[in-house]
Image 1 (cartoon, rainbow over the protein chains, first blue to last red):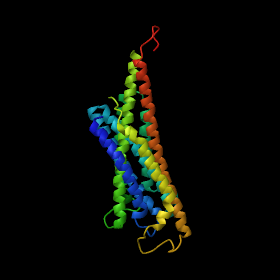
Image 2: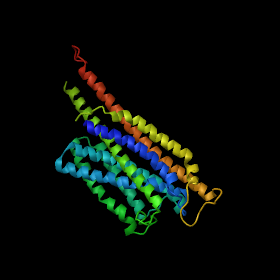
Image 3: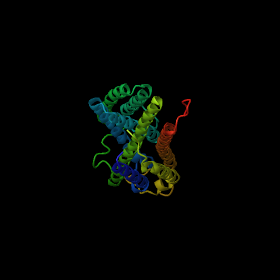
Image 4: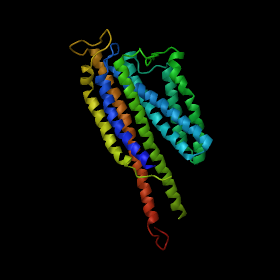
Length: 227
Length: 108
């Protein structure tokens, strides 16, 4: 990794930790209490940014997968693999915090409404993506198979996003549109969104380091076998 | 593809500690901070002077929601750091073996 990128990684890590403190402060003190839902609505400032972050993660998987199928470069596959893992983490956070928020507001932990069901399906697809990578040993075959699944999996993302407009459900629609959110809430939300997206890139950098280290380990093992 | 021993690795424990500290602080302060924040909208679920039973119940859910976020995030960062350390230790061990002179019977 070039020195410039390593320095950028370090700066981003420090920046994201500082931003996280501000984000927490904003979610609890900066944003006013929502009148209908009360304080539990404060989950919004992390739940929704993590949902958008998970879409970004799966979009990066799509880019990496298409890149691999066109260029056949190992680094494209590494980007896709790393982004998938972080996308699944973000999606898990969304699937866990959603029901915790839903229980006191909707009166139920889970309902099979379209957005919830599609989000669960999306999570399952990318968990399957990670499992596929674990069970295929041959590197080229693994990269090819997972690239196809990574591309197909992303087809679900627009449906998850637009599901609140296409089908009536419990999730509100158009909350993020200008004018629908209190200005103070909107400001905190946007700051938290950028923080969570920045965190995504920091984690992506770390996860890619792990992937590169594993490749180096394979090379060293080969050297040892040939010895 | 080789791995540079970057300064990011040294930053990881500090970053993790800061995140976990933020999470712990958040968990302790959630009810106090949340009740201190100004309110928006025309109606209020909570009373002016004290938290209603409904609002107290919602604060518990808020607490568990953020606890889940920090546990998942912290757990992932710890697992990432642990996996990186394990792989790097294995690389170091193998490189040492490769660098060591072989004995006459073929063993390193």
